[in-house]
Image 1 (tube, helix red, strand yellow):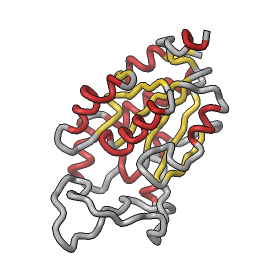
Image 2 (cartoon, one colour):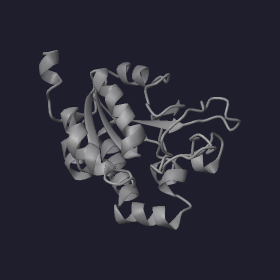
Image 3 (cartoon, one colour):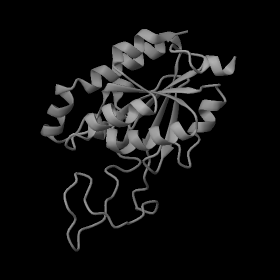
Length: 214
């Protein structure tokens, strides 16, 4: 019976968890007018709100993996990379990639439109992968959750890293296409059309909400 239940297409509250990845002020309410326009054109925040409302209506637990980097840089490791986060070539003397926001800042707080409710779980993380040295796997398994719905950004960074990990940990995966974003070339489309469909299911907000049940 367990094998059959894992192939159930519905997203029932008893076995499904919603992952809102880095749903932070700094990302969803960016200082840059260009980034604000980018998110607004794609309706990212309203879509995430509808997704969260749908999950709460049926009792699906929500989890918030969120960057919690030490302001003094003590948990950040310098490494050599060919480009910076925006895929611009690194030149000699350039500073290594560092976190965009640090724990304790306004930017590192959850966007108020997606604020956690009673029963939701914050998951502080220090790397892209939401499972790496966090208690996310424990929080899911103690609730008998075997399928995750994931939304947030960036698609090609934390979402991808978390989805790869979830797949190898045998979780069922639903990626919400209109709640994920990346402004780096065609990376968003590439992952949503060429990578994630082999690892799980890719759906719109409306499609996922329609499958949610108590």
